[in-house]
Length: 398
Ligand SMILES: *Cc1c(COP(=O)(O)O)cnc(C)c1O
Image: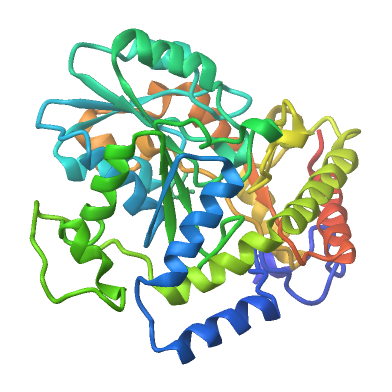
């Protein structure tokens, strides 16, 4: 296959394929899972409770409810708002499927907006321009781990009585040390999916300053059963429960929580690795005009979930897709974040969007490549990524 040849027709920068992502699971995580398996308590129980407490303490948040995905956290945050058909929820187009699909599932209408051309984050101005009397909520996404302008977004939201539900799937931890994303949020939803900065395989956490909403989310996460019933795992718990409203099956298991507990212990060390890798990429690409490093206004406050470089396509003779194909031929895995929602058939057909409807997001999409960045990526591996990127860029440079 032609695309298997390295760009110069010679040998690739490495012989063994470097995956775009590999999880970092230590012996501690393995031991904790084994402990849970031996305990006889597999589903929601004491380890989930411990993870909620530890997560709350880590962020300095008021309430934390563990659920079985970041998507579930988003869905339950919206569920507490009792949205109706005709209500609108504003969502940036530059995000993953989950952010908008949960709006559809509540019966409300997702209203897409464009994003900042540099960071990919939703701006207060784009948000405000989309507000009308039907607007009930907004879901800002902290793209790649760079916190949105939450002061600006909250100011607009408060002025118009719109509820803010933060999609914090990438943002653990993001923002200033004493004021991490989620700490003072009305709702912030974290994901513990396999590729996220902290993983439980599948899992998520909703944090909120609203005590009542926290109690309702907890109830909704397990069939809407009454709180007493929720404590059934307690030794003095009973067989009795009451269904207070129809809920969902979104509870986290103790097996998953075991992973999360040990991942949280290691989070500082995992993040230090991400930060060092991000700095090295930024240094390596600083001289090449055909590539821009990841956008980071304050690198030390960035969670570095993703390292997204942006190609200056007018200085290259190739497309982004061709560049990724060439990386693959050098045995380097890469990815693309994100295919904006408005380009997908469901949203395109339902709302009649064209690519240019949201030009900033479209332009970001066309020129973005996510490079490998994860704890356990060795210095030699990262060196290969840099060599491959520079080799391909040089050969396509105008
Ligand atoms: C991963 C992700 C989610 C969903 O998280 P899951 O835990 O996979 O449900 C939501 N939003 C964004 C932006 C994500 O990247």
